[in-house]
Image (cartoon, helix red, strand yellow):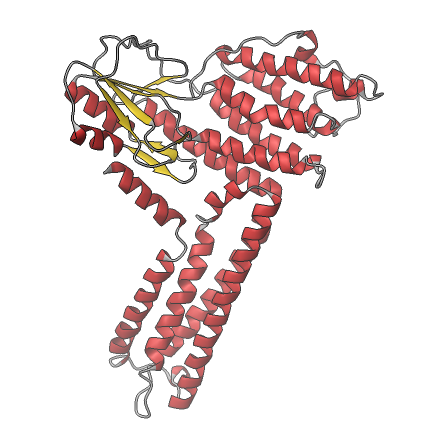
Length: 447
């Protein structure tokens, strides 16, 4: 089933032992191949070793690679502890996919098995000179790769680097969704109630609890067209569904059996947690969590929240300026060959991105000024249908500033847009938000 293939692919992407295992097997195979080649190759005298020297060198290489492998694992564990304690546990979904970590583990394990395959063949009358030299070069490459990994590890622990990585993953996920939405086999996206008056002929329910990680949209559309029926998915990607909860409702005239329900159920992947692949809102959730933790009383680091808002604004700008393909409203009654999938609209994503940061950073000049600058920039660049939601957020920000800075001498500064938070001490009109006295409704822009 498609859901099984998706889960296997996700496991392979986050698995830390698969690539080192393959590399270890490859090291043993290359060691045997190197022994065969070495018999027909005559190296210069300075690349030849005595049996005792070769044994000593290979033994040292095996010991060194094993020790370095343990050190890499220790560094990775420390990274997990710092990431979960400082940023967000949800960020570990991206940490496990780090290619540098997998590469250094794979090279070290491959060097270990390669050297061991050579060590057991060293004899008094035979020394694998080519293999010993190759093992030395592999150790040098392993150490160099470890230094690169360690430097990258230190840089990626910075909050701004974490925010940039999460925002980049969210942008890639959203761009993939845009490509999928432009396909002629793409399902219709809805952000409100589908308003069915007839009862579904088949209700596909979940067999276990879990979060909806991904949906095979093209497969569902193909099935709906094949059976000339309407499929409705009442839950968003990322929703947690309980066991025996409705996943898909089928509207039509024909009768469907257990095999049809199993096939449809196999087009929705459930897991213990959300993923970013089809859920850009999860990337926003991670960035908000990082900003919230920075704004907590225990940490009190508004600058980190401002840096998160920098990259949050870039992701929101990508979503708000995307020209999604227009699809006519599909009447549920009588519709055939159509799939309706609920998705978050622009209003939902904007509120998710800014509401909690505004609340937790209500007393921070930096956060209020950066939020105002972000909203004014979004208002100028997003599509016209998305501006009402931005104006609503501006009005809410104005109200929050008045509540928390009403008796403060910095009221004027709190209402000044500033990209750096406190990059400028000048006072200026609050901008568009100053004319907003009440929240205004936003337009639905499916994303």
